[in-house]
Length: 119
Image 1 (cartoon, helix red, strand yellow):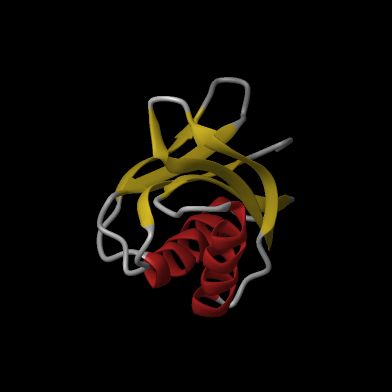
Image 2 (image 1 turned 120 degrees about the horizontal axis):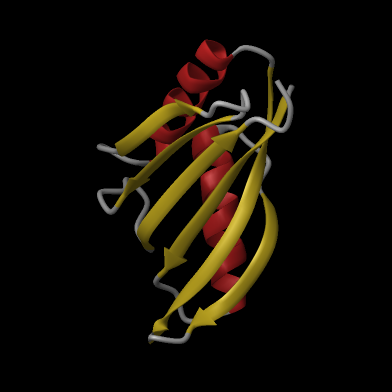
């Protein structure tokens, strides 16, 4: 079973407080509950925060997981470049997407990743 969508993003905000406000906006827009995993200034560009968060995701089948990830991600951005789903010889799989064309002001770049833990 897949339990989470993992997200990494660059937020163009001035403070950690605004990071939390932007996550709250994502929660509202996508009807999810984001859990912040890490939040730090991006070393190459201090106007950005490098953010990692996850959202709950309970899917058993690959097709259901891919479709649900696309539905959630479309609420956040107009256009995504997706990779996969890729299934390895060991039966593990992953599905990824990334974009810079977001509907949410303050998100410069965002990527999602859904991957199996065990098939």
